[in-house]
Structures are given as C-alpha cells and as structure tokens.
Length: 294
Image 1 (cartoon, rainbow, N blue to C red):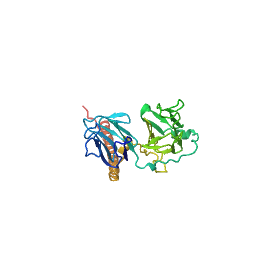
Image 2: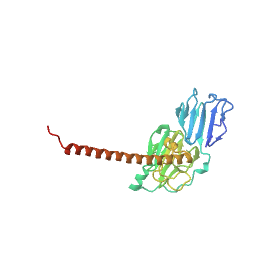
Image 3: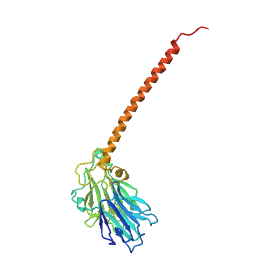
C-alpha cells in the first residue's frame, strides 16, 4: 500500500501493516506543519481486519471520496482522502500487478445461461454523481460525457467516449476508447487493463468498485470456488480475514458445537419418548383399573 500525494505536499509513504499518523506535529509519520491540521489529526491503520481511517476527537472531518468522515471509516485501495487543501491517494504499491494486455475485439454476445451468471458482475458507484447506483455488465458499459454513454460522467475533461468496461467470460476488461483516455485503477493510471474483484475504477471525481463474486482474484487464473465470496473490501470480507491459528480454532469450536447439538437433540427425543410411555401407562391405568362399588 502506498500513500501518494498528487500535489507534492509530502513524499510518498509505503506501508503494509501498522499505523500512519497524520497531522501538523513534527514527530508524526506524515507531518504537514504548514497546514491547518490538528497536531495529530488522523491515522491510517492497517491490521488483520483491513484498512481504516481514524479521525481523532476535536479534529475536522476528512472527506473520503467526497464524503465527510468524522470518526472512523473503512478504506480501499484507490480511495482519495481530502482535508484542508491536502489530497492523499491510496495506491497499489505494485503497479505491474495490473495486467494491461486485453483482447483486441469486443466481447461475444451472451446466451441466456451466461447472462444469468453475468448478472452478478456489477459496478457500484462510490462517489460522484453515480454514488450508490449499480450498473450490470451483461452488456458492455460505455463511460463518457457524451449523450450516448451508458454511464454519463458530466465533466469537461472527460471525452464523450472515454472508456468501456466489458465482460469476457471470467475476465472483466477496461478498454480505453482513445489513447489519451486515462482511468485510475486502485490509484494507478492506466488506459487498458484487466480488472479484478474489488478494484476501484476512478474517472475524475466519479469512482466505482467492481463486484464480481466467483471471478478470479488478481494474480490467479482460476475462478473463486462456488460459495466463496470474492474479496471486495466490504465489511463482511474483512471479518473473514483472521489468522490461520484462529481460523483452526474457530473450526474446532464449530465442530464441538455441532456434536453438542446432536447430543442435545438425542436427549430431547428420549425425553419425548419417556413422556409418551408415561402418558400411555396412566391412560391404561385409568381405563382398565377395577372400579370399587358403592
């Protein structure tokens, strides 16, 4: 992970785990003494749960992809943080991890079965005018400022036909519609690229995340097995990130609980059977017992 400063306020910072402290105090990892930041304004924390932004009490809110954060927020690679006049871009450390070679031709038409599977592959708006909206990739999606764009981006610096996102079997393709059409994928400037589940795609102020459960993660050629949730940096995905030792313990605990449930169920059936026998005995005693005369 890299913290990049597009306006040059600070050198780039690489880190994998731990805490990056940000503020105007000189002893912090990111010290910006000429800014209007609090002495210790915020921290970016990377741990086993994921990547987090923590804004300290009495500090001004930080805008994450254009939306204010006053206390705590989860971060993704590709996010943009803005506070005071400072911008921090969260970037992939390894730009070469993004494959730039894409198919020469557009995707083939999908049959009905393929359309059902493709319906799970989505673009979700993270910021900009399409915040919260969802776009399917059953058909290619053209992004641009023109009236014919499937996803319109109202920005003078964006071409009428900027880029197209296509689904090719188990691969999602970002195709530039002109040589100058630059798109940022996880903070890395690209034209053409193969996208992976969880990637963040940014064109100017509009940001989208690719949700593609079942498609291969970056660096893998095999699709994620059925029933496995692809990593998209959601809260649910972060909760599954636990060390192997804890994971094994968790499995053992679930197995013990299962056995206990089986034992409890067996005991319950024995109690029901005993109650039924007792009820039958009492009924027979009342019906067939000799009655005394008066």
